[in-house]
Image (cartoon, rainbow, N blue to C red; front, side, top):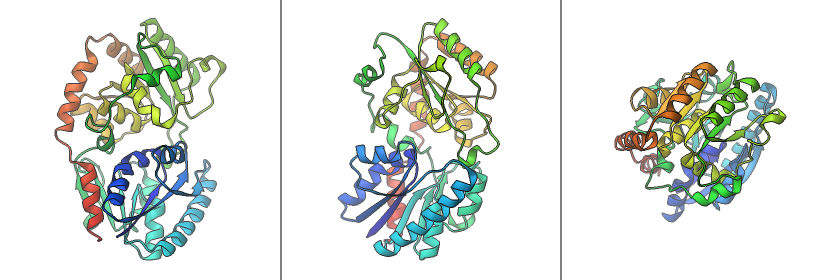
Length: 341
């Protein structure tokens, strides 16, 4: 069986890396097409996954529209050369359109139900769309369901163990607790109409965290003022999950990282005006994530969490309860692929 994976985001690398290896081990012929976005290419290289980069992510609306045309065109060429039985993607905007043009079935795994523009563009072209049952949208007969957020497939305790030696690369002492802050660029299609917190607001948050005796590490997609230089680090892609797992608290604008923190057993404060089904579920059903919409609310919740005794120990019990209810997502993906064998 020939299987084509379209990988366009760092989170997609983590989600599919086990499946790619499983497919190769089972004797299938696999081709991976990548997109230069954030740490995507670096992660594929670090996991020794052979791939071909066919486009680079853009920021402006016009540039992204042009990339859509370019990447879909190149995907169609690659599909016709490789002649796969099926195409596999996450949030498969590029892959679904290209698959429809080349008349090859495309399976898309989706967890971003508020990406209205992206969903409007691609869902009619996808052959199958797989989502968690908590996903708010429905796609008629092509829709299939599983139970579990995406990162549960690669960050559960059976798959991942944090490495404390990573801390030394970022000047973090084993004896000093720290809080990890993540700031995003807000250029993604699902970020349209949203905004992040401003420099002075973040500065106040940092000072409040330091007063409680915690160090601060910042990972940022945007350029920050000079004040933040001593806190801001350029993280290696393969180190990020270790840092989240070893931190006392995650505070950030990335919903993906908030969910990853929850699965890693780290308390997470998600700072965003977006309403996302999985961060809401992790908060209201399992108390694993705290969603906040203002900096005042954020500072209050951060203070309460950092002052709470044995917080991570209690949270890991809730995490284990959540994981006991989810499907084996690697098996879900493999079963979806074999439907087209």
